Image (cartoon, rainbow, N blue to C red; front, side):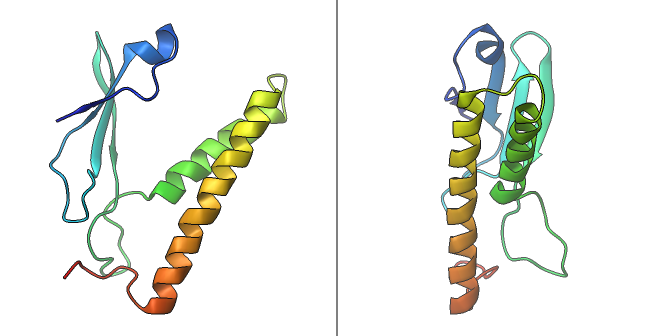
Length: 119
């Protein structure tokens, strides 16, 4: 288990504890994360899909799905009373991240390796 602190910036985010809850996968990344409060424990577990995509059933979420939630949330703020330059810039960068992740997927599909297990 390892703690992640990239989100720390102010009391609210500093009080949220983000940890990995599994070992690294064959691809070199974790796929289970817990987000909790330093006093109240785990609030949410995030499980990412890992391994081959079998029977049209994902085993967890994708980075793209998580980005879609963040983009939607910030765009909603932008349509309401909390719009600001910083949210607009964040949306742009999240959309850019989405573009590159989708570009990677399209490339993997073209090469016929998307959803394949590592050798």
